[in-house]
Length: 219
Image 1: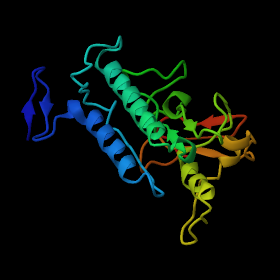
Image 2 (image 1 turned 90 degrees about the horizontal axis):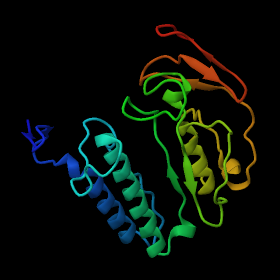
Image 3 (image 1 turned 45 degrees about the horizontal axis):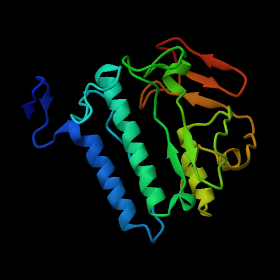
């Protein structure tokens, strides 16, 4: 179901994927405007730069990285628009912003000199940037090499909000707020790498060393 755009690419019926990043951004900014006077939680999960690659026609072809690069620059513009909205609404100093990804790049992206890519348990498939912005609370330009995972976001955000962890489940993550707020290192622990959803862990590491199995093996 769908139609083909002017580049011969199939589009789902009724959805112009070239405009998705723009539409997500507009909805995110509208959400901030509606909830500026109350506590809010905004989860903005872009489809880009996942395949298929449909850059915004307003900026298509502007990057030096082809369609993939165009999509990454679309995300940059989106992030800038959301941060600008927080500034304009006077919310920046009361809002924690976290930007990260769930895996390393696909074959059109760069792992930044690391080995491996998406669905690999090499560092290039698992180690991704995480940017935290909270003016007045998180020091601008600070960098840490303390290992952390996305599973840490849930307990960290709850701790910062002064809320307890739920008692009806096991929470695997750890509160890493001390790392963000004061640069304190987390106690050493093991982090497990899963190549795909539902798969068994295929690598484990701590702050010092990493053990990785060959494909097809399990820990």
